Structure formats: structure tokens, C-alpha cells
Length: 453
Image (cartoon, rainbow, N blue to C red; front, side):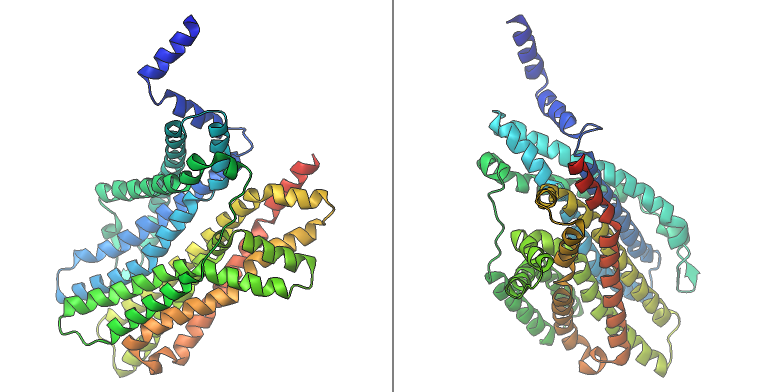
């Protein structure tokens, strides 16, 4: 009784003692889930590095106070919309990378009698710790990239010291990443608190409704109509322009899982091999997770249409005569934006696909026990990602093209330069996704070897 009383007093004196202890036990070094815990931390590191680098580049233009400097700021703001929203999406995806593992741990705690409050505290602490560790590494990545990014020339001079963000801005970015992770963890926690047995037995098949497509079409139509409407106030016109493209990016994340599921249903009916059948089933089991595998590529395709149209405009303008450094700097900005998009694709391809293998480890082990060869399992895993790639690329380019058309017209949108830019970007993005699959093949091997051992 005295020992029990001492424990109770310790818990009462430190309300977070139990959640902290449980968080450590679930994530201590040497646990089977340690690799899965490192994946979201690595993803948060890349997200933070890219976020800080993009913000630093955009805010460096504040060093000029003239009229031309205002043009640079407007263009930088547009680039931020094209990059920061996908970065937020990637950050949200990072917050959910180990959600299944966390759900299983926490639902077990619920079945053992842990209170909803304790489960909630453990969830937030685990997610925040992973995000904070990743964000801290991301700040170091931002500093490592500094010597290279500072070499970029704008208005005839390198960025130099203007690249460095104020420490308060860096702290705010880190806090935003941690907050994003905490909020995402609380959202994913609801089903654990409500029904721990359902989560533990994986009785929650994902479903995506066709209404997503209807909402997406409605939003795109409204955005196109807004862009076609003449506006006499410059500030309002810019707000409409930026808002329309931000809405277009958001719509892709809304309709993406439905498109991926629709493609999988079509392929399921026409599957002629075991790997094709299994690939379609994997997608239909979790269309949202399948969408996250290719969502970064959709963002690159969306950006590539805008960047290609911009490149075509710049070519036309230069044929008439360049104006100081503006046209050259705009092309530099276009290239930087696309490169940042490719970095997001590479990050998403590697980390998301490795996390997916760990998430589906029991499925792959079960198939292997039943005699399915490793090559067939790997082919199904690759097919589940690569099958919807063409559809996703086409849909993303179509949404972006619909928004660009009112601004540039068909002549610029269908310009050979724009078309080549789009084709090259899509090809490079698909290559990065496929390379990410190849790079994570050893993860599948380790999962199957662990089963054999």
C-alpha cells in the first residue's frame, strides 16, 4: 500500500510523468518501431529546410525599396504560393507517416485501461518530439545550404547576407512545423479514443466519395470565372490571382484520393496478373495513403504548367528586348521554383514509400508466408504507386492549365517552350518517383528477412 501511495503521489505531483514515460517506452532506442519513428523526423527535417530556404529567398527581396523591387516581391509571393502550400501538404503527410504504428500503440493502451487524456498527451508528445527533432535538423540544413543559395544573382548581384532570416522568423517556422505535427496527431487520434478495438483490428477501411470531384470542378470553375472577370483595382486583381492558384493547389489534394481510387477500380477489373490485382487492392485499401505517394508529383505538374507559361512569356519578351535584369531574374526564379518542386518529389518518394513498406509490413509478411515470391510483392508495391502516375499528372496539368489560360491565353499556354518545359518536368518527376521506389527496395527485403528470422 505504501508503494502504491508513493506512485500515486508522484503522478499527482507530475501530471505528465506517466505520458512522458509511456512516450519514451514506445519510442526508446532498440524498439522495433525505431526506424518508423526516424522517417517522419527525417521528413520534417527536409520540410523545414525547404521552408526556411524558400522564405529566406523571398524575404531577401525586401532589401530593395524601389518600384522594381516591388515587382520582385510580387513574383516571390507567387512562388511562395506554389511552394509553401505543397510544403505544408508534405508536412501534414510527414505527421501521418507513423500514424498506423502510433494508432496500434495507443489503442493497445486504451484496451489496457489508459484514459483518453493519457492517450491524447502521449500522442501530442510523441508527434511534437519527432517534429522538433526534425525541425532542428532542418535548421542545420538551411544553414548548410546557405553558401550555395547565396550565390544566386538577382539584379546583377548575389543574395549574400540578405539570405539570412531573423532568428524570430526561424523560431516561428520551427514552431509552425511542430504545431502542424501536433494538430495532425490530434486529428488522427479521434478514432483511437472512440474505438480502440476497431483501430487495433484495422477495421477502418478508407472510403472516398465522388462528391470530392464535384467540389473540385466547382472550385476550378469559380476560380476561372474570377480570373476572367475584369478588375480595376490592382490589389484586388492580385488577391484574386494568388487566391485562385492557392485554391487550385488545395483542390488537387481534395480530388486526388478519389482519382487514385477510381483508377484502381478500373485496373482491378482488368487485372491480368497477380501483381496487378494486388497493386489495385493495395490502392483501394487506402486511397489517401496511395495519393500521398504521388501528391508531390502532382504539385510539380501544377507548377510546371505555370513555370512553362512563364518561360514562354519570357522568351517572347526577350525577343522584343530585355529590360535590365528583370527578365533574366524571372527565369532564374522559374528554375529555382521547379528545382524546389523536384526536391519535394524526391523527399516524398523516398520517405513516404519507405514508411508505406513499414506500415504494410504485416501484409507483405503474410503474403510471403503463403508462398508469394518477393519479386511479385515488389512488383505489386511498385504498381500501386506507378499505375496512377499518368492520371495524376494529367489531372494536375489540366487544373493548372485551366487557371493559367485566362491569364496568358492559348498561344502562350500551348507554346512549344511551355510544352517542352511541362514534358521535361513530368518526365523528371516520374523518374524521381520510380527512383524512390528502387531506393526503398532494401526496406522490403529487411521486412521479409525479419519474418524469415
